[in-house]
Amino acid sequence: MKFMVDAQLPQRLALWFRYQGFDCLHTIELPQANLTQDEFIRTISTAENRVVITKDTDFLQSFMVKRILAKLLLVTTGNITNNELLAIFSSKKDILLAALQTYDMVELNTNEIIAFEG
Image (cartoon, rainbow, N blue to C red; front, side, top):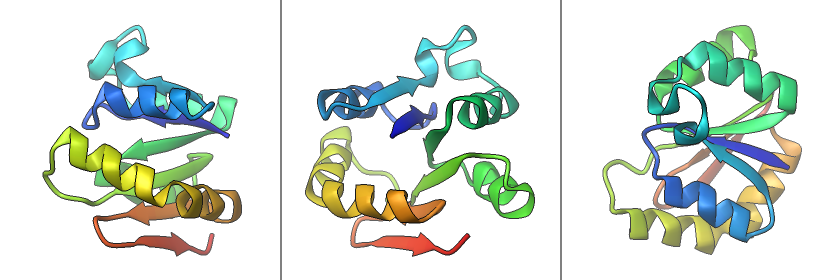
């Protein structure tokens, strides 16, 4: 499974995914860095079959209406520290990955993982 972490989330999250053995990019690594347009991220997601990890509801809207992305992981934790965010990903890793294997759209908040039929 491949991932793309959007600009509102820390680069540390991409590094965490790499440490877990996954191919993961962060927008900071792209030519336009964190100014990368959503359309470019969508193109990469589709071309490289990457799950987009984002807090940006624009991706949710385009995914629900047009199904442009390969898969979407919407992070709805609100404003928390990077350490808290990484702790949530670490504690829910296995369930999260299983959900992403089955579902095209998954939401992660501080309490639960919600998978949506696609």
